[in-house]
Length: 156
Image 1 (spheres, rainbow, N blue to C red):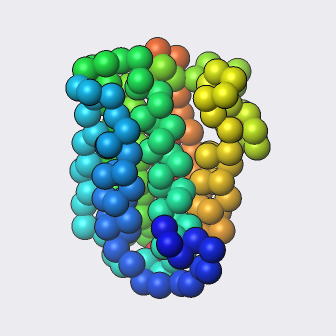
Image 2 (cartoon, one colour):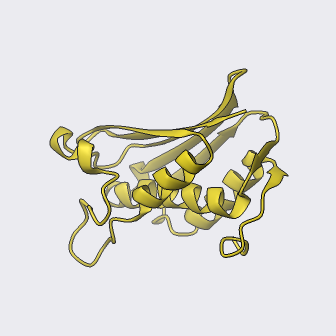
């Protein structure tokens, strides 16, 4: 993440960036909660690695926060694959989920479903902006009390 302030494009292994972000978030999980990484082979990608790492960390932090109340049943699953056209990254959790009425606002700056003082409401906004700057997309699907899946796609 040291290159966020001075962005420089580089060809990188996206799985390496994901792996580093996962290790950072795994340390924040409550005892008994699990983080599972299923990273398939990806094509190297020309990108701003520090920025993408920041986006991955924001999405993973949200997932980790969503499972806080699940104890040993809490789980975050990270998957990556290349479908021949694009890199696909899924971050799924079995956390609290978000009400359907709130879904259109999840990317709004300063919008948060967390208690006052527990979140800034900027993580998903920043992640969306970074992914879009790379020509990609980010989608959000959530079911209350079941969990959330965030899907990031990055073009070849």
